[in-house]
Image 1 (spheres, rainbow, N blue to C red):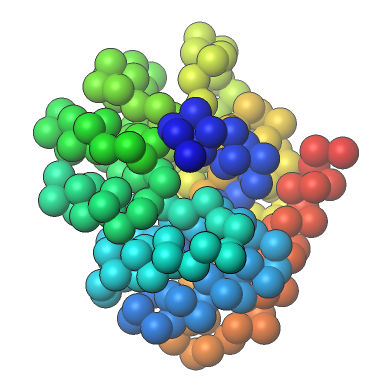
Image 2 (cartoon, rainbow, N blue to C red):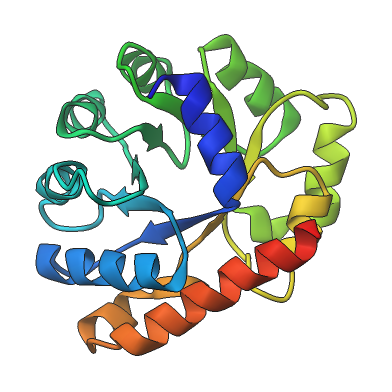
Length: 214
């Protein structure tokens, strides 16, 4: 899958589960629950122990329909590892030229972090395929809509503050897709083995996206 195809898949799915697991086994179990609930885009963050190994394990499951990414990527080394492991997209919370160059050099879609307009312009110049708006909770959907005014063609992925109650507002504001973390699958839920609850929340998010688009 090339970078353009990855972005199209993310747009189709609508919600990316931002997974911050306390351990590798929990991450894999959480992914299974998310998939069972209908969430098909998963971002394994580098706050998860052995994140690269988790990504490689999931990428090796050819029978699983998933758009797989790496998140909270902070170094060029992590970017290279994630791409080699099979990540189809790589996400940063913020961006430096060296980090951006390392991600852009891979075959993974580069979703680079920014917040204010000048930062969005900067990461686009660095080669971003899409821009993660973080922390999106600070501005809300109205801020995202305002950003799209002068930059209507820039694919934006707001992350932070996304819930089942407002996911439709984010999509209506022009988001390519949204990133959902604790409201969808928190580290505490994973640590406590709340797989049924994670599946339930995944189904609720998937339903909210479908409802917003119809």
